[in-house]
Length: 155
Image 1 (cartoon, rainbow, N blue to C red):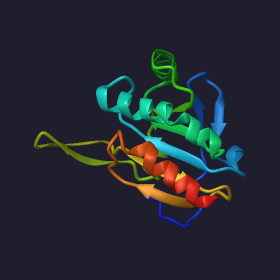
Image 2: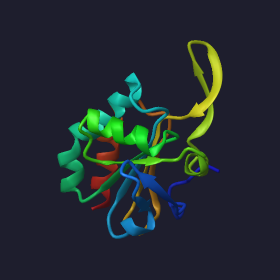
Image 3: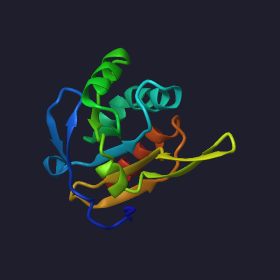
């Protein structure tokens, strides 16, 4: 399944980098940015997460929650967040249930080779829990600016 703008965002609960349950339903009343990434502490994923960190003041000002989701486990997320001083939530989805539901798992081509994996993408959910924007196959350094623009357009 792939999410579509205007539809209700699929509900989920995952553990964050501290092992605490984080639920999309608990975020109602404010916009949420969900970004999907392949693997902690790899160059592109580090750039993507640090881009959120570097735009954190904008997300805070807009009242948005931000959560990065990957198949890595809680311990890996904890190390990654600490190493790069990430202020936002990282959610562990080792079974790829949420990643699949949001359409962030699929075929990728890199250096001429095709494989299955997490598709770097972002979804903005409005305060009422509806999908407000979807950014497929986003470049790490473009994610935060695009997501912030979408969040600000909701105000």
